[in-house]
Length: 439
Ligand SMILES: [Zn+2]
Image (cartoon, rainbow, N blue to C red; front, side, top):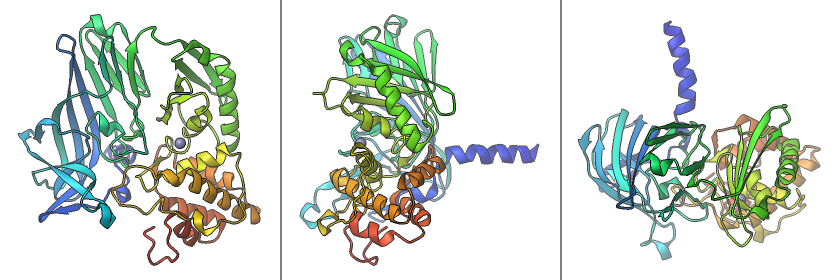
């Protein structure tokens, strides 16, 4: 029995604990050590007050730490009524300054530090805030929308979270009158929606991170919907739901998505999500973003966003220094998998060696990253290796896990049979020697 308990714990622990290598370094401020912790689970209760037009969110986060220090969490606003292990606690804004002298006085990003030192172990953090972003009361709707090129534009825009490296199960509970809840549709990438009187509960899977959680609550019948199934290469039926701003966007949508998924599966293997949810916008709307198995896109960007179902939202970048990988590979695919024999010096750029607390992806990842991937494809081809075969293996190994640039270098070098670190340092860190290269 004891052995069984240990085995269950090991199996379970593999799911819920963050990969320790991704936990960012502590931040020293005035002799205090502020530490990033490992979220184990988060429950957010949304109390929707229709008369006063307010949503109050009460959050309960259970986290774990191996070291002593002052715990940090990520949130775009200052929450209220904070308690740590049941006792009232104060918080402090911990600013991270920019890397460059010119910008040294401008905060690069910030986190919230709890002014209470914790010992190693498991702790409970509770707080409250009024949710204002993404909310409308006429008629009621709530929508989370992210953007990876701007800081604090993930789940941290709406709810207290951890940095992107952390994967943990989230439960969202919505409390209101049945009169309101009954008029609403809940679009999300949660695995479960539980309904009861005056209550809707969404349970999200354990592998989602702060950049992957999708939520859009809207009035029933507001959007035209098309539902169908896609039979994947393992002969399983994948339910697909598309809702759109305009009915005309749904024309031939089944054929378009089926063709896309067939091409993707032929190159990168089986679709890594149990379903696919897509919110389609007209082409003039610039809301294109990928969540885990859920996407917001125009028809034009749809192939790019759905591709991210593999790179970015099955395998998730640990931070803003790793986000370049998925954009570079997506652009390489969008361009028809080109091979580039030589790369000039002006293609070198710093995509992966910026501030270690960076959360957003470098814009040049699309163009310069694509060219670097095209060059890798050429190099692999010279050795009669197929670069996309490596990517397929890499995806399989890291399905629903977090990766960073170092892991990508290590595993692509192993497959290639030669150390590629110097090339990565040159082209994605803009460093001509290994010595100054932080990878
Ligand atoms: Zn992209």
